[in-house]
Image (cartoon, rainbow, N blue to C red; front, top):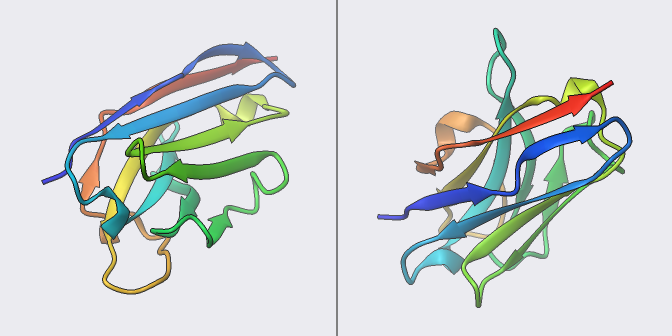
Length: 126
C-alpha cells in the first residue's frame, strides 16, 4: 500500500513557476515509477510527466516539454514537478500517481497506475 500526498499548488500569473511535491509513504517507493497527471474542469485526466524507478528515464506530454521537469529523491520518498513558463491552459488539478514496475520503464496511461494522491490545484491567471 502506498499513500501519496501532493503539495505546492496555488495561484500564479502567466509566465510564473511552481514546484509540486508528492510525498509517498512506505518503504518500497523505489519499486514504483511515478507520474504526474492533470485534470481540468470538463476534461479527461491527462498525462503530464513520468519518471522511472531510478529517475534515469523521464517522459513528458508535448504540451509541457521544455517547461516542466520531473524528478525524484528515493531517499526522501518524494517526486517533484518543476513547472516553469506557466500558461493559463496549465490550470488544472494535478495528481501524483505510483505505478508498480517490475522492470525498467515508464507508462503514460492513467489506468495503469496503482495509487493516486488527492490532487493539488494549480491556477494560472492571464
